Length: 393
Image (cartoon, rainbow, N blue to C red; front, side):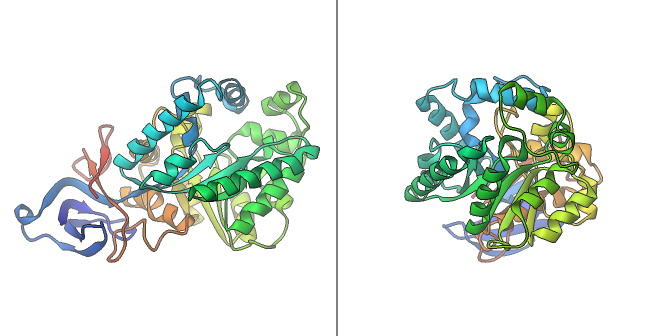
């Protein structure tokens, strides 16, 4: 089958091939690409763009039952309060039906792979039966030092259950503000040794205040619930993470994903790059706007050459799990960034983080990335508010 389009985005280039075609076999493997001589002779012509399947680099699909239940602009402390009160507001059966529906919707809209956070086993069977590739990050919480051992034991049991289900999985820490230093270190070590770690980093100023000065709404929230406080360091939360994890050790070549990065500074970014050899940076703009009306410093990240990826986060902090909406949000707020560059973040960079770049992330002969139509582009080939995606292969 040959699919042709006005804009064909191939192997991560910022500039598309104009009036290009891609030929695939019955299994979706790329056989050939090239320029179209006559659009009428092609099996399928797309007036917009054809792009490789997306990689959703950060999602909590098991929270899909929470769609529409959260108050916007609550700040991180208010968001945590809502999670604590609403996480179990649906039955297990309702949760599974919701996450199954959204897994199907993501696949149909062109998501070929996902880095997903799990706190339980609700999503395991659905992921195992999905055509989408997933890596599940078994995320840990625990503010009390004495709970580190039992929490880690439970994590390894859940990890074994994920592997028996037939899905790739890793243990991972949540964040600096929900974990004792002991649990943060133990969970990070387990993730790094597995080769993959995903960590919520610098999502809000409240997080920074907690670590720098022990003050602010997150600090008040922990005290309200009688939780132990992380050490006051006078440094950023990312520097605290780096120091807590320690120097180069087993897993130093692991793929690390730092998620959100709203408060990222140049100093922090350089410190992470000096400590980790394979660090990626996930942005979830719609979620950041939902919780605290802030966005990550995209131009700083670009200037430093950081490997940016794109995620949707969850339906507790987003109205949709739509990668095109995330890309359009980035384009609208950072119009100097080309669609091709945003697409690279949303496809190839995510595939590289997941270690799946030999199969996914770009349209190259021999790969099987999935092919997606981007529709309703403007006259210059940019996204519009009406843009949407649909899977072709």
